[in-house]
Image (cartoon, rainbow, N blue to C red):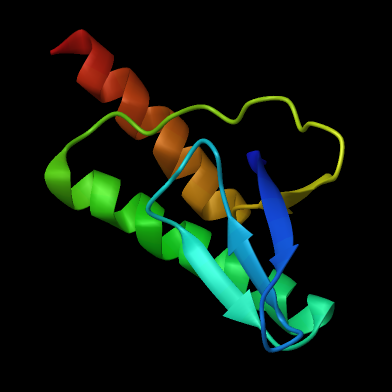
Length: 91
């Protein structure tokens, strides 16, 4: 399963904004850390779908840095990403 590092930063309202260094299109927000994590997983999946639609190679996850949390793609999406990237590499 692919797990992408995510940064959880406090926003002005006391919630959290989540960004992904490897997938800059994925941005989420949640009022609590739990909600932010849930929304981050959804944003990550949605952003990956954009890569599929645009037929762009999906970046591999980098190593998490200090202060970052790993957010996993669903197993089926992870498998699709690996297969898709392999297909693009052959063309």
